[in-house]
Length: 112
Image 1 (tube, rainbow, N blue to C red):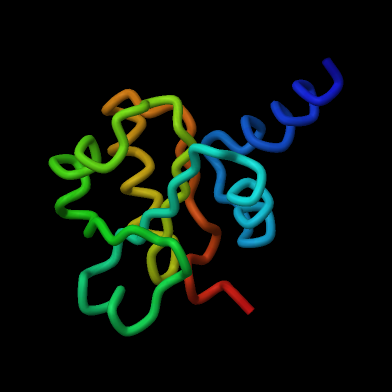
Image 2 (image 1 turned 120 degrees about the horizontal axis):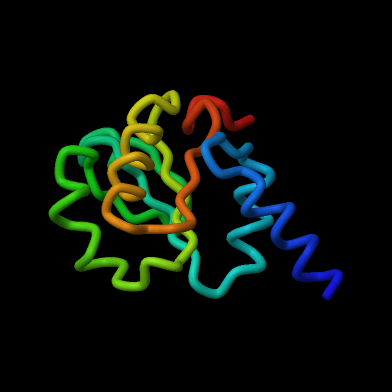
């Protein structure tokens, strides 16, 4: 019971907010069905990206996401260069019915 409450506070408490890289790492480590999506362009992704990230450009997100992630309850963490595109991606996915979508605060530039 206590674990569920802590989990709800840790994850669900971030709805509508950005999460830090440290929080994202904790979520990725603990959750079995967690996806890290880089919404930048293919060129940006090839230059630098986070380990285990899937590249789905923001402009292709709506038509491509369901091929990669069918479970709308899965945890999805989006990131871009600064956090702007990932916030837009979060809005798109939530409008599609995805329930646990988060945006990485300050994007990849906020890491380190």
